[in-house]
Length: 381
Ligand SMILES: C=C(O[C@@H]1C=C(C(=O)O)C=C[C@H]1O)C(=O)O
Image: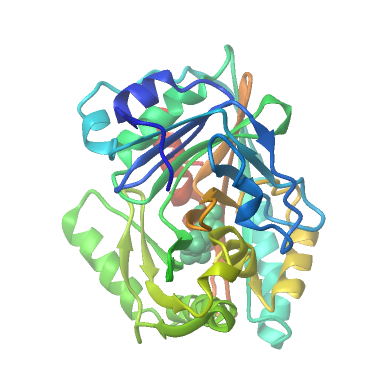
């Protein structure tokens, strides 16, 4: 990755303002500001050499959930780039920031309607027409004053030491903020890594319950099925590009502060690294059955029928790619879109034939906690 000086991660975060891009991982904090130019990304035709003459030979941004009918990908070559070390530990030592007091909260759909939607999805799943579908719901939260994305971002970084914490500008002055545990794909030279997550159990403050939840997840046939479909799809999507692929035979526990997941880290070596950038790998993989379903098109159609809102950039991807084709893309989940005085929080879960609609509702509630905690809000969504 090219860099313009090594920056201080806390300073970069303190400087963050609406419109900037920030991507914080255990390895580094990437901060980008301004638009030297927009990258007209329309899918497979893009080449990293498009960045060769840029002052900052790197593009950052977001892909929508639906690359054909959704909003356009927003990828920019920034005017300013700062790359710093990891931010989490130092930010955690700082006081949390006040996000404001929510005035009104609307669940879309209402909780019982989400349960109904899951029950409806079970029909094609039990008929065998579909193997998995991911259904999401949103919380629309209104505030009396403007919400500052920098404050939410600060708290997300403090709360979530692992994974990918991000803020990215969206069209219309909105900001996508989130803390995703899930690596869609990373490419460095010939080396490729994907770390799909699927299968979820709640965390508990009682250590015995917490451990029992984790053990239950590892043993759950339903969750293992949900997970295996994602691994299968990721391997299938990566195989044409890779001369070797290492796929663990069973998933591992992947904890976040809000939930337990099953995760499988898949690594590979590219056959022709000059031919495929991190961004192209991301679009070859996206949307995985972790956020859409199996088979992909039928699942996407059902998502459109059953979810009474547009996913927009939720369940898309967020990350960066440089002129060498290296880059890192996280699945854009555990996130919210911030617009002036409102926030829209998203959470979804994978449904298979053995799923229980009430448990699926609880799973989305647990996932909302990543954002609600960063907002200092304690409620049962
Ligand atoms: C769709 C979301 O999460 C995805 C769905 C999961 C599941 O169904 O178990 C687990 C991790 C994510 O891949 C979300 O957080 O909104």
